[in-house]
Image (tube, rainbow, N blue to C red; front, side):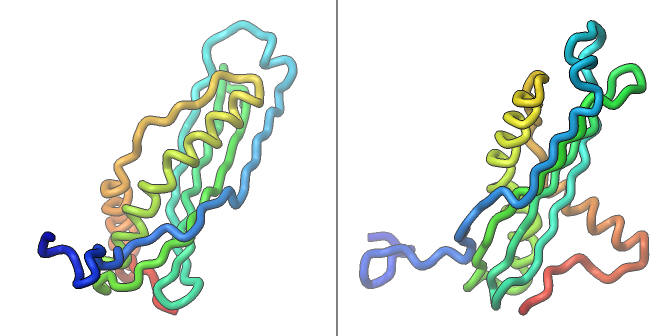
Length: 163
């Protein structure tokens, strides 16, 4: 046995558990269809919007939402708009207090991202376009940027409140 094992031979409980994951909201708008689907031209270019939000549901249980949006344009014309909120229910019982916010704002979206990316790809494909294949996202950098924006705005430090 290793030092990480308890007397019963099992690992101690993890301080970060995914209890559930789900599609919370999905919207796909195809304002120029069918014209934009039959016209020749450059491939639509999209701008990604990203947000991570966490809210307390119970003591040490949080809903984390990964919000993705893309507005695709071609020649100054909106081709499609897709917006997605993919969420998970996380339990952080046993995590040190100073680790809760980074767990929820970095690790939780990292767990949710592959599933959200798949939903986004299917939505754009089903809308008649090539599937959007997002590159991996550096959620540490996203978290740091959120902290910088809050500091610049004079807001208090980024943290997730306890229930």
